[in-house]
Amino acid sequence: MDSAGTITKTVPDVIVITGMSGAGKTVAMHTLEDLGYYVIDNLPPSLILDLARLVGQGQGVHRHLAVACDARSNGIEHQLEAALQSLSAHELTYSLLFLDASDEVLRRRYSQLRRRHPLAASGEPVLTAIRRERELLEPVRAQADHVLDTSTMYTSQLRAKLHGYYSELSDQQLLEVHVFSFGFRYGMPAEADLLIDVRFLPNPYYDPNLRELTGLDDPVADFVLEHPQTRAFLDAWCQLLSTVMPGYVSEGKPQLSIGVGCTGGQHRSVVLALQTAAFLKGEGYHVSLSHRDLARAEF
Image (cartoon, rainbow, N blue to C red):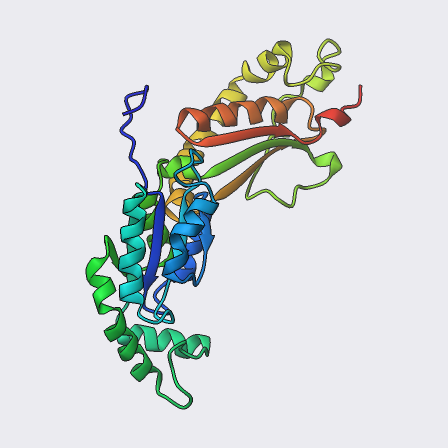
């Protein structure tokens, strides 16, 4: 439990990803990479300990490692057992993740992708190769800490499962939110996932006492926020964010960019970007803030 009273979990030093070819190994690797793991594909199990040392595990460097091993490694069940024992002997924690799916689902996936199964001999039906691989990996499956059947899983569901197993962060904290202000005068931002236009709000530019200030100055913020129109907008805007943000989280989206625009990117958009960032931080999201066009302000 941390200083705020939140229960935290400890993730393993090393995650070994294995399982049936076509069951979601690539998605798992990308997900763990997004979580900050050092990820290596198709590693012989005998090299896991050496790689863990190379990335600093056991030496005070907290870079978690994820490696994918599959049936192409001869004698994988014996190699993996020995590799995991060596990790324990060096006081490194690990988790063995086994990804599975039904034979028919795997056959269909290979058919759709028009890929050859890695164990298939020339001219061999893919189902024969799948069944042979399943037999080879059955002892590994029996040792697994987590077995995930992806037959009916969406990609977002698999990511969510892996977040739950292997991330120390909450689902909200996993979503990197960047809020930025901008001026339409200088062009539409191509990078925005969500964009809100606040040019309909009262403009401080027309007050001679506020024209040469920016949305970072209290008099401008007070001018913008004291208007009933702004307060009504903020209530509706925050309600919209409260509705859509959990959807982005559940989809496993790693990054979200929110643009708040006014005419010149100097007054209203700056104030409302600050308010947006503050609201999302209060909701538990990891938020960064910038002002794209503030340095271009014309007085």
